[in-house]
Image (cartoon, rainbow, N blue to C red; front, side, top):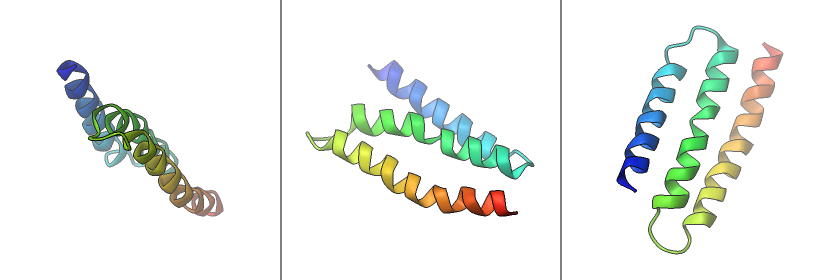
Length: 77
């Protein structure tokens, strides 16, 4: 169980480093949004209490609603 936690944290860290290392805006958007996948599993599996699944879905929805205007702005640029 701890190996899954450590691997998800390492994947998240790697994706964050990649997202701030790329030079293209489209690749930045893709890498930045790909961080959500391991975060969803981190919150959903290792969260405390029974509301962790709901918190994981809230994380996805709020980030999705924030990233759609960002994507529209990138397409406009």
